[in-house]
Image 1 (cartoon, rainbow, N blue to C red):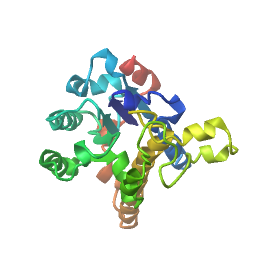
Image 2: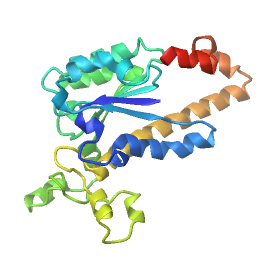
Image 3: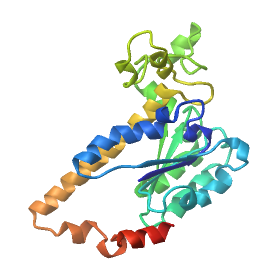
Image 4: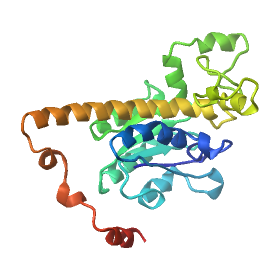
Length: 261
């Protein structure tokens, strides 16, 4: 289970729910987990800024907004964070370590030239280094696109701003993968190619975030499977070594239902 807390960006505002990065991530990972006779769930507890809540208080409500049994927590409050937001992110990382599954905290940044994605921001770099051993990481939409090699700065000089409002095409793709299945000229296909609706990412921008998370998670799964296979070949009891059977064993369906309802 992956649970997201955050602002309107996390909620996917100005987009269909189907196009939010959480929905895209769930669809991308689902076939992999299905092959193992399992399932993946990506919960979206994002909320608009109009309610008055921000990262300053919502980090303490993570177990109320998403499942208390999440394996990964996503955090995204790009436009609310000012100087000192590292405090709330650190609080969330430490708070998450008190949860049953000690979930990793992953920070999704809607832009990427600020916040955690500034490599020269000492406070952010220190936070990354201090909590990397607990799985803390940051994923930044624009930074990821820049690393692909496209020369966005030269385009800006000639009046092309792919990160501007309603621009279609990120320099690599003109629509999402599922948009490619639609016929040319289809209005939905063109809309799915929007990188940023306004300050909110569009479907194509969200695909960048979804793909980054999916790549990291699948890479981690493959590494874990290699380790487990080595242990099995060596005759190691993998359940005893890698799984807290007593602490995490589920009760009956009735017991589980009573626990959460």
